[in-house]
Amino acid sequence: MEGVLNQLPIGLSIGAVLLLVALGLTFTFGQMGVVNMAHGEFIMAGAYTAYLLQGVGFLVALPAAFVVAGLMGLILERTLVRRFYGRPLDTLLLTWGVSLMLQQLARDLFGAPNVQVASPEWLRGGIGILPYNRLFIMALAAASVLAIWAYMNRTGQGRRMRAVMQNRRLAATSGIDTGRVDQRTFFIGSGLAGVAGVALTLIGPVGPTLGTYYIVDAFLVVVAGGLGQLRGAVLAATGLGLLNSYAEFWSDASLAKVVVFAAIIGFLQVRPQGLFFVRSRALT
Amino acid sequence: MAISEVTVRDAELLAIEEINAAGGVLGKKLEPVVEDGASDWPTFAEKATKLIAQDKVATVFGGWTSASRKAMLPVFEKRKALLWYPVQYEGLESSPYIFYTGATTNQQIVPGLDYLKEQGKKRLFLVGSDYVFPRTANKIIKAYAAANGMEILGEEYTPLGHTEYSTLVNKVAEAKPDAVFNTLNGDSNVAFFKQLKAAGIGADKMPVMSVSVAEEEVKGIGVDNVAGHLVAWNYYQTTETPENEKFVAAFKAKYGADKVTSDPMEAGYNAVYLWAEAVKKAGTTEVEAVKKAAGGVSLDRPEGKVTIDGDNQHVYKTARIGVVQPDGQIKEVWNSGEPIKPDPYLKTYSWAGGLV
Image 1 (spheres, each protein chain N blue to C red):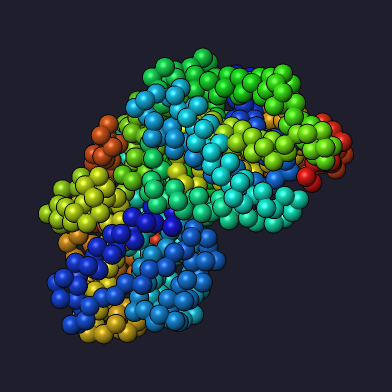
Image 2 (image 1 turned 180 degrees about the vertical axis):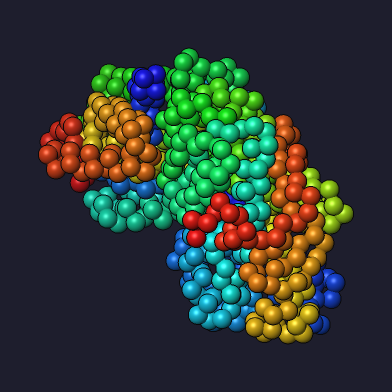
């Protein structure tokens, strides 16, 4: 019985991990419609940033990883993605290629084996079944959601971003520099992937292929939640986390994956646009 | 190439370099051709075909995971070429065109179970990745347990590359086994040990016996997370033989002082030497002649004496159980005393009757 009860906080913490890896995608994929396969490698870049900054402090790594991954995203947007707007299939192949190159780059820079990132002292221990590092990830996910919500709804930049998403041409006609908005959106989306990468060093491997373990889950959350919908992503991540937790508890990890995929496919049959959606004339 | 394959390749290249420095084989220098299987099974088969048909190599050293070996097996059998596979595996195989220089089950898993039994750890929980090696290994473990009065409290598999272990850790914590037998592969080990440690389950309470965690993996998992846990192999960097002293020194000199050596690397390193010795004996690199000459070839290697069993083309190896130390090295706590005759089909074990 205790095991069953424990799965509840475990499910929520799995949901928090899913949400964290997917938040960035709600910007690049959700807002801009860019199927960014290199999102996982921005997560990886964040994890390696934490590795490089181990002596400096874990909390310093969070903003640093945001900037590092954000700049990588910005460069990707400016040099390549920008030329492929409105061509989702080409973008998919393009960013997939970039993702492979970034993995190889990581291998050349840091070596093929996983590197060791020690958890900070103050995250050792836990409450009940939940270790402090899981609680930290949940808090970080919640803080990120709040920050994004405030940015989107309470700042001029956020309003412009939403305007461009909802109607790109009308936004441009109203004097919004859509190119700049695109850059900023990509920077923030990629930066959030970096933040997720730092958090993932607490619970998983830190190596060149780290991103590949999370990229599919990240897309699932965004698709199930509805493109560009923050509350959709939050709900979808939480729901998938809980579903995963209980499905694995009552069967096994492989079957749990099947259950989750089947549930999403079934759900999308009923609601092809996800939990929430707005009618938009975005890039797609 | 994935994490561990790169280091095996490095060890094999070192062996080739050493053999060449000592005059080569049959008066000729060995020339390596390196191909990358990219952790993708069809690619392994494709590259093996290329090496045999296009590069016309004398023999192939390599492969990582049983899935890659199973993919290459038909290629080597069809083209009557030789593969030297350097990784411990689940047994139940004996291809006439493969030499197995890593451990088969009776040289690694069975001794690991013997050790747990000796320590009074009779209630086990099995954790593995969902592919051929763990599934077969666990069949053997269950048969062993049934015959030896041990209890299996749970058997769980996770997909390859799985990184979310909180549910599994909860299941293990609830079952309260004496020990966990771990056949997870690669990066999953990192996630599993990190999350086990974070849940406050330490080696003192519930030791984990791993068969795919060597010195190289310990670094990536983080010593803090895995120190005190058990591993079963045939070789550690700390194994005390004169040959190992030379191997470790040569490896560090070539690849860097911070590098570690591990069991699969040593098995790959040995494979090159064993092949060279068989070629010298045969007087040719022709496959059938080398195969015939290989039986009985015996060398003192870093892990101790290794001898090729001509019947099943596996190698006599000494089993060693080790404990991960806080410095990342592995300290041997038990060994089998002498090299164990390879028995890939466990024919000499009465409890294994129903497995094959």
